[in-house]
Length: 154
Image 1 (cartoon, rainbow, N blue to C red):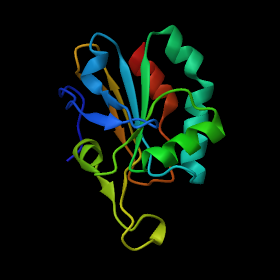
Image 2 (image 1 turned 120 degrees about the vertical axis):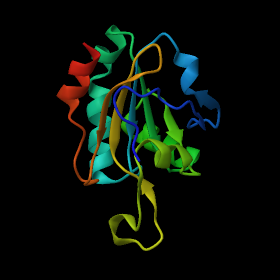
Image 3 (image 1 turned 90 degrees about the vertical axis):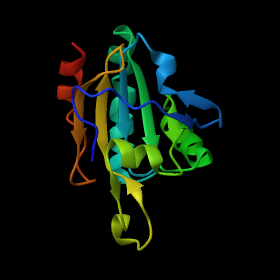
Image 4 (image 1 turned 45 degrees about the vertical axis):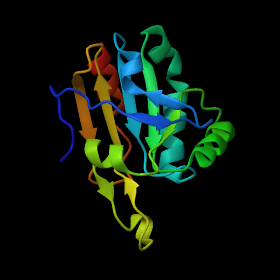
C-alpha cells in the first residue's frame, strides 16, 4: 500500500550515483520532494527528470531538496544524470524495498518478463517528515502533476 498524505514518511538510506549513502532524515527541517521513476534512459523518465531539472531554480529558491529514486544501479543513475545535466541526487533502490514501501512496483515493465520497477510517484514531505502531497501513477507513461507538487510546496 502506498504512503499517503498525513503519514510520517518512512526513513530510508539509499546509494546516490556515486555510491554514497543518502538518508531522508538528514534533510529534517527542510521540505523534500521525492520523485520515483521507473527507469533511467526511458523516454518518459528522461522527460520527467529534465522537467524537474528545468524547474530547479524554483525548488532551490524555496529551500526544497529534490531526490529522484529508481531501481537502477548507481552507475546507470550516474550516466543518466551526466547525459541530462541532472544536479539533484538520483538514488538507487536496487533492492526495491523503498519503492515497494512508498509507491508499489510495476512487474514486467515495458512487457519485459521479470523486469520490476517502481511506480512513477511524487511525494512532498515537510520539515517534520510528514507527507504533505502524494501522487502515484497507475500508468508509468504519465508524468507527475508538476503544478500540484509546486502548489503543495507553497
